[in-house]
Image 1: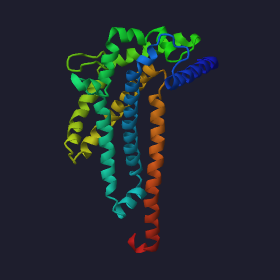
Image 2: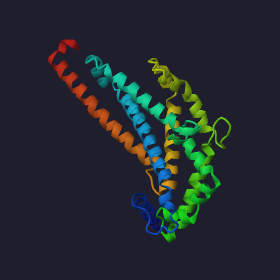
Image 3: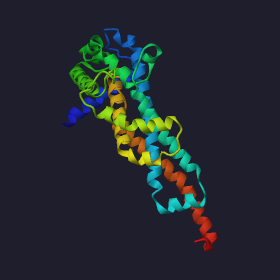
Length: 274
C-alpha cells in the first residue's frame, strides 16, 4: 500500500465519521435518515461488545499483575479479599456480556434484542443486503465520489465475513465458518454457572481463557464490521483492544502500587515480620 493509498483511506474514514455524526451532504437517496433505527442498533451492539472486552481486559490485567510475588505478598498481608470478588465480577461481566450479544432472536419483543443474530437477520434480507452493498449507500454514509468503489468493496467484504460466521437462527441454520459457534458451545457451561451465581468458577476460568479471549475478540470484530457498514465509521477491534489493555494495566498497576507501598512501609517498621 502506498502513502497516497493510506492518505485516501484516512480521508475516507474522516468523511465517514463526519457522516455518522451529521449525515452526508452528498446523500441523494434519502435512505440515510430512514435507516436511523438500524444505525442506532449497530452503534449499541458495538458499544456493548466494547464493554465486554473492557471487562475481560481488566480481568486479565489483574491476573497478570497478581503473578508478581511482591503484589501477592502485599495483597495477602493486607487481607485484600475483595480483590477476588472484583475479579469474579469482571469475569462474569465479560463472559455474560459477550455471550448475550449472540443470543438467538425469537418473535415479538425478542426482535429488539441487541444481538449479532438480529444483525444477521437484517442483512440476510435481499433488499437490505442490496442496499448496503450499493454505490448509493456508500455515498449516503459519507464516501466521496472518488472513494465510492472503496466503500462498496469494504462493505461487501465485511458483510461476507459477517454472514460466514453469524446466521439468523443458530438452531436451524449452519454458518459457513463454525468457529464462532464452537466457542459459544465451549463457553455455555461456564455461562450457565455464572447465571446461577456459582462461586466455584476458578477451574473453569483457567480452562477457557484462550476460548474466551478468541470469542470476545471475534464478537468485537463482527460488531465493529457491522457498525462500519451501517454508519460508515466505527472503532476497529484492534484499536479497542489495544486501548482497553493499556487502560486496564495502568489502572491495576496504580491500584496495586498502593498495597505494595503500604506493605513495604509496614515491613520497614516491623522487620521481625519478615
